[in-house]
Figure 1: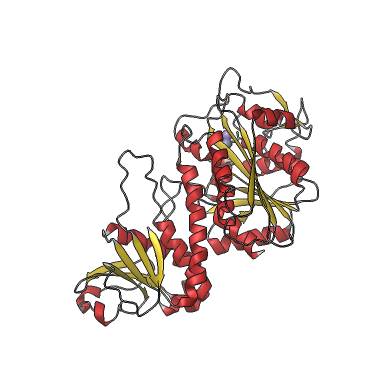
Figure 2: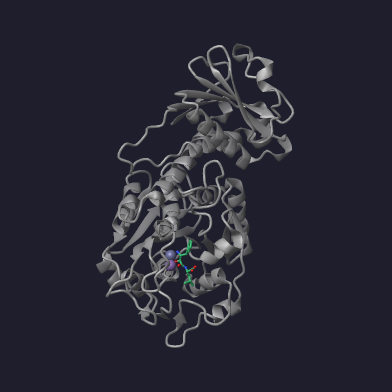
Length: 483
Ligand code: BES
Ligand code: MN
Ligand code: ZN
């Protein structure tokens, strides 16, 4: 689906479907030329997401409820955009127009309204068809936003954000046999062809030379060789600081020797969602001006059982010399992230590090599918990220990291162990506690546990259900551009 912007008073006869957004308590009105008999709207309340369609002389009019104006925010507007795109597709329209009401612009501002509508419509139109032998092309070819000229820049931004999210989702949705660590690295490399981005890929030999024993220990059981991706974005002018975005890139997590149960194991294709979000952010960075030097670090590997695999109790050595007892091979994400954090400290020396990882099942229990868990080392960073989360609808909730959690990760046979002993509970905090000693010294750090939000949950117009959500890419871009 192609999204276009046309100005009010443009002719609409080329559009088979015209959507109007209706405030709660008022009647749908698409203008004289699209008059529909009153009876068609009987009982229509304008409640948020309420839909009703009626036929005008030559076109279909789709009324969608805005709900109460006081409750209207960017996330609601995104959802309405998605709903219109999906209803237009379901109606079989080749071309549709959405009349943007003044109320939406007044409430969100021209930029905010443009961004949210474009984002929502494009996110709602997302499809994953490329792995079907007879993939069905979308029927809806064009969606036109009918809105004043000053929505233009916002619409353009919405397109950039939605494309970044779709890039992330495409990577998530591919299964592990079609998206191997090498493939993930190749996708990153592809991003370096445009903008001010370069990309270095470190293969297995390079990882050995770097001394990344934890990442290699996770990869040991797999036939697929691991990769370390290092993306680098340079700002146009003087840099306001160095930021490292770190992503867990398990293209498949079987659990290894501590193997997972078979139910839903296929979902562990999504265990590279943190990495996909980082790559998604770089997708957007190709066309945005961000005044920071941004590094994207991704550890890509599979976690598999085999005769070569790491065994419970094995001791591996991190890039910074720390030794780790691997008591549960399924707690592999923290091992990969630990080496990435060492690499960040040695090669990037960042002022701020944000890592994203589908790290613990426990965060799904704690926060479900609506909120990601956030562990932030400073209240400033926590507030910045939380604001970006609220702005994008990719929301974060702070979780605690206490000394008892860190204490529980001390090893018996080595410096650290990768799972806590005893009855600590707080599985997500334990994961964060394992990472803490590897954070580059002097850097502010946030760890985002996205295990609950990267996929799953009930449908929210464009996310939910079987597909990956793309969580994180839009959040990171919002944070980078509003900082
Ligand atoms: N990738 C999983 C976390 C996960 C589980 C994400 C379910 C989404 C849904 C991670 O590598 C893992 O297996 N974590 C273990 C840690 C445990 C062994 C300490 C977990 O959460 O069970
Ligand atoms: Mn695991
Ligand atoms: Zn995992």
